Length: 78
Image 1 (cartoon, rainbow, N blue to C red):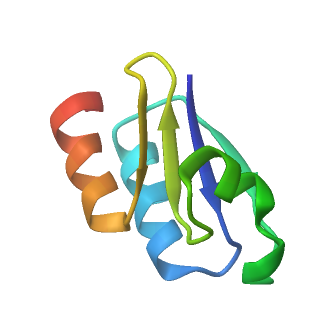
Image 2 (image 1 turned 135 degrees about the vertical axis):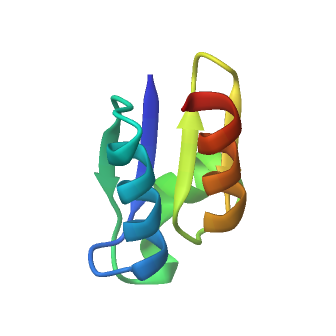
């Protein structure tokens, strides 16, 4: 199961969404709070409050930073 933590309107999150969709990867999106200080669930899973964050339970991967996530999608999920 792949979970994406994202913020509506975030261009970096949109890039990750597009990559997941383009590669036909099943995933769930959890929409985060716009207030950085209220992203407690993101902090709990990733240790920081920035988005996007992807969690791949099957591979045991939790990752932030859109460029890293895009590389992971290309190399591991596509």
